[in-house]
Image (cartoon, rainbow, N blue to C red):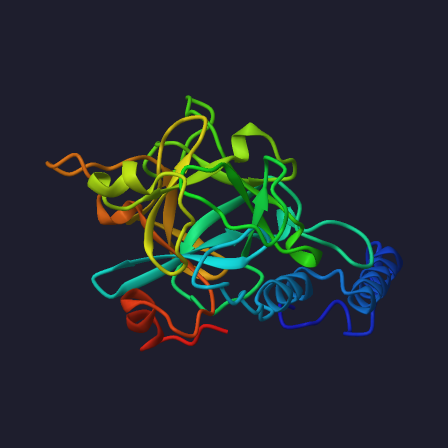
Amino acid sequence: MAHIRTYRPNVRVGNWREDVTLEEDSLKDFLERKERGELTVQKNVFIKQSILEQVHLSASQGGKLCFGDVVMLVNMLSGDTCSVCINADLTNLGEGPSPVIQAPCGVSGGRDVQPCKRNAFIISSVDGSVEGEPLHYNQSFALRTTLGFAGGLYLTSDHQNFQKCAKKSRLQEVVMEQQANFLSWWKVLHNDPQDRLENEGLPVNANNKVIILHCKTNQALAVLRQHTLWTPFGKEYELTAHTFLDSHKAEQDVNHWLLLTTDPAGTEHTRAFDTNFHIG
């Protein structure tokens, strides 16, 4: 008797009607969400396409950086080039028909250094300086993402504590925030400490190595290649605000940054950079 089939394939048992209705409702909900572009895979594609949209960097005026310039922050060390990038994922995507990136948003050292909304920053005034005026050494300023999808967020930092610090190194955290305040103030220092005093107050040259110092904490922006992060854009480096000094009391290479523009003349640094990458 064991070989006798009790039910045929077309026999319905249990709560079959409820199961069929649930499947139909689930399929209907899936198709509606797909039509509205609300599926997770669609949102991920939307974020990547929007945030990687090309941005044109500013052309420096006479080789000088000015307020309102669109620049990239690039660190070069032994041929390993990375740039400061906003690290946005689904948790940072706003609602509505035209969503934008919302704060707080992390940052990382991205190895894709083509200019785009993810790594382009606008030099913004915090002291009433007008757009087009030169940025001077030791003058406070803010770094803001482009408007639109990038959200117009500000690069911000503060003293670390047990609840707020960089994930891997546990040093001072750097994030993007919505509001501009004293925590988002930075200043540029000459990369050579011996020439720092005599250059104070002079216009900052574009495409030259500089130190980007956080005004409140007096810590320099740094990229930590020994600490890697897995992001929606791949394997990247952790960023922090921490001054790393060598035996001569000078900032190490991890604290050296290029504020890149599309200066056609360029410098030895931008020429080396442009050998492998196109600055648009």
